[in-house]
Image (cartoon, rainbow, N blue to C red; front, side):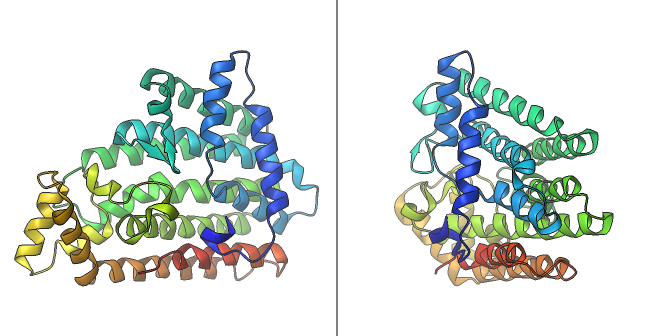
Amino acid sequence: MGEVLNIKMDVSGKLEMINKRIEEVLQTDNQELTDMSLYTLRSGGKRLRPLIVMLVYELNEDEDIERVLDLAVAYEIMHSASLIHDDIIDEADERRGSPSLHIKYNIPDAIVTGDFLFSVAYRLGATYGKEVSSIVATAARKLAEGQIMESRNLKNLKISEETYFNIISNKTAYFFGAGAKSAAVVARASKEMQENMFKFAYNVGMAFQITDDVLDIVGKEENLGKKPFTDFKHSALTLPMIQALKSPDGENVKNLIHVIKGERTDFESITQAKQFLVNSGAVDYSIGIAKNYIEEAIRAMKSANKTPDLETLLQIAYSVVSRIRI
């Protein structure tokens, strides 16, 4: 994780706690279901969402951090469940450098595994009471709403930035915010602080998704854990594409449209589209928007206690955008 997000503070202890607890809660009476569930969770990932949950809790509460561990794990498990379903929808062959679950096993078993993971996450969230359980359930609802909205706008060359922001707000950012807010609730923080924690993580989530979309264009496969140009392949228009389509460069816009529609899949056309997204300023524009969200996230933390946990959260925020190397 440190290499990807360049976090200087040592979070290895928290990561060990998270990974150990994941192994425990995913044990079932059916060994195949256990194996498929653990295959997904063991495949890597930054564990960014559960780390934010734990750090927000510590920022607002002095009690043992194990008190919030199951909540942190619930969000990571729910996130992994959504990735299983996303890979099926997107027909993605790889996830984090390994075969996607539905490729290694099969689509029906992968769907069931995703459903099982959601059920585990809900059970863990429910142990924290009605308010937290409601936040967890709302986060899951937002995921579904965002996915449907994205599916309805595949290949939509007229999609607006507003619609794009609504999609990533539901699919990614709200989920980040929900984790932070529910952690603050468990920590018995004030209502104002709960909202500030939500704003911080929500804006980090917006920036995270925008930078992911940029990395799909300019990132290297060994760092992404998946093949680049995934968004091209399943025709989801991202912020750089939306911006580039406004360019007066007719020839390159035409090629980009063909690539988005899947009408041109050859290496040369895709490379031309990638270069156009960079040269047109669309990538720089998107990075600028991501940085604005990070600034909003930092502002939300102004009233927080100055502690090592706050420093780590701020490092996470800054590192989200610094992942990009063009």
